[in-house]
Amino acid sequence: MSQDRQSFRAAVGFRVKTGWATAVLLAGPVQSPRILDRRVIDLCDSAVPESKQPYHAAMGQLEENDAKVEGRVKIVRRVTKASVLGLLEDYRDAGWHVRDASLAVGSEIDPASIKNPHIRAHALEGRLFRTVLEDALQACGLSCSILVERRAYSKATSVLSQSEDKLKRTVLEIGRLQNGPWRADEKIAALAAWLSLA
Image (cartoon, rainbow, N blue to C red; front, side, top):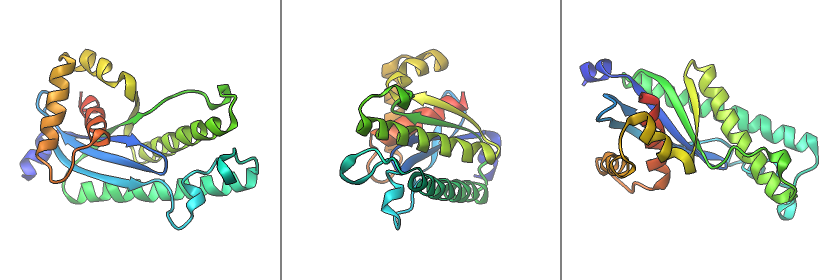
């Protein structure tokens, strides 16, 4: 097993959500990647519920108190950094050398372009969790790319030179080797990791 771990590099893909992310670790070769790990990591503190939606005030309104937002964002940064360090330490301890990461996100829309304050709060949180996770990964020396979910398979067909149907079958097969459900979040995180391997 250790020879396999040294023979092929590994890459981790994430599906970023509000307050958490699904991580999937794949190893090459690129033509037939295999899964090494999958798990959920925290990007907020469950003991501080406001850290899950730092830009929300009561009743789904946009939080306008900058001090409250700043305090919540600090918690998000602290928890995300600890989650990433723990994840990468587990991978190192297992002998897996991870150099690349990719984050699958729902959107890259500029929150300032959204007029509805409640929807803007969601967009601000989407950007926050993505950028904080990206910063934490880069601080650990990983190169990091962003993949917008709705364009993921079209990008993958170009990069991996395979049809979308073949890519989907391969991602499904990767998940069949795991215990437990293989949901949409795991599938898109696996595709993101696969693109990072390429």
